[in-house]
Amino acid sequence: MTGKFNKIGIWKKFLGRIGKHFYWWKANKTSGLMFTVTILECIKTLIELNNGDIIEGMRQSSNVGSLVGKEVVSELLGAGEMIFSKRVEDMPYLIKVAWYIFLNDEIEDIEYLPKTAEEPHRVVWKLSDCMFCKYLEYETEYNFDQNTLKTKETRLTYGSPVTKAVESIINEILDYVESEYRCEVYETKCIQNGDPYPEYTAYYYTRE
Image (cartoon, rainbow, N blue to C red; front, side, top):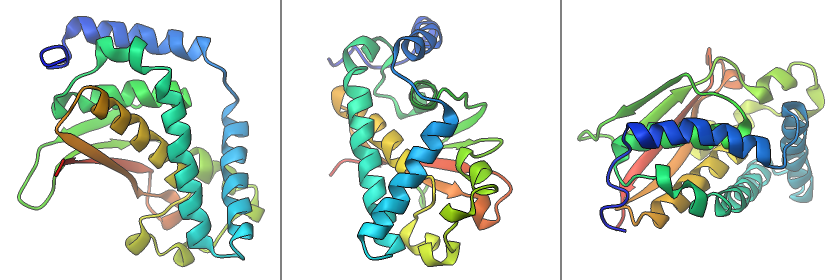
């Protein structure tokens, strides 16, 4: 596999752009609303099963998201290897493809940020709105006190199940191409926390 995943060129990008639509059309799917309600019900149920412990319920729902991500990507690895790459600089493209396949949503604003003395390699993407926050405007039964989540310490948000699913997808691909990196994904801006838009960041750390 050594030279196979060195770089994503124009041909690979073309295949990925066409292939993501075919994969979405072929895959079993649900509406955005049903997807949102399912995630929020999962969070609510796990909080109840943990005697109202919001943080533990959110952590467990994130673990569920991680398992879902592995299931999704298991079907993609063989067919998708033509667009895979070891280069961390190519990760924005892979994230855009994975995001579309998983959520049927296009990422318009995404960038790669090189490693610095303070930060690892990062990919940051922004969305114009959030499927969770839009729904929470109308369904107050799912509204939890954001302060209880202690987002700064726990890095948990309503989007954590989705971020962990995407993280799982990325890591499965990184393992498949024998990359030197592992990835962690977090929602770094959240409308529910007062930010103007949702933002996600994938951090790439060198494997120990």
